[in-house]
Image 1 (cartoon, protein in one colour):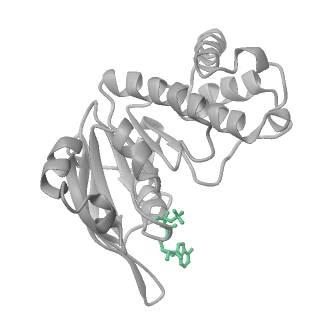
Image 2 (cartoon, protein in one colour):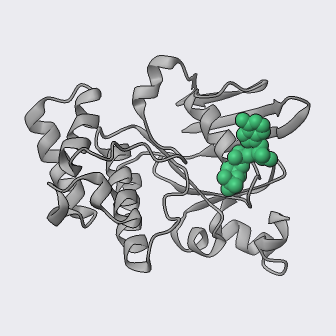
Length: 230
Ligand code: ATP
């Protein structure tokens, strides 16, 4: 379980996270929803230790996260980080190798994952030759290829067509079914509602609601979650 407790963060005098507290359960697809500037990316960067918080704790399976724990995460950053000139398969193998995988196992896993994500025909094409949606699929492969214990994905569904949304959803759902906590951000409530087990709703740096999709539906059925996003 990934647990955030009382996370505060200010940029200068501006507080952008205020007591952010929520959990991402093992095997749970957890949608992190909020409008532009709500604080999703800042929260994810703090989870990964890319950014430090002013207060609060982040723990994984009950222990504080250290720099060495970053290897346990699969992270898809908001600013996509693929090398445009590299070939797709080569790129994903490279990420697995960075995590210490042997060449053969890295190639096998990268190939299977890319095929599953619908990029089986594009393995030897350069990243820059792919459409943005396909680059995004490759980016998801990059986050998953080393089989991390936890997945943290910043807007993995943005810009994908409905078929790609389904493909990515099935890959992520299967990953969560293997026991990993999966946290993904989105500003598209309809997608999140459809895909997640649990929801965390953030607005103005504060958590407005969190819990299972069904619990939240019962609690906020008449107002709908939209009102919580403002
Ligand atoms: P979006 O969906 O637009 O990416 P978000 O929910 O991911 O939004 P954040 O990127 O975490 O939101 O931003 C939260 C707030 O912090 C915003 O008001 C943003 O302008 C501010 N912010 C983010 N990064 C910085 C920075 N480096 N310096 C100053 N302010 C920042």
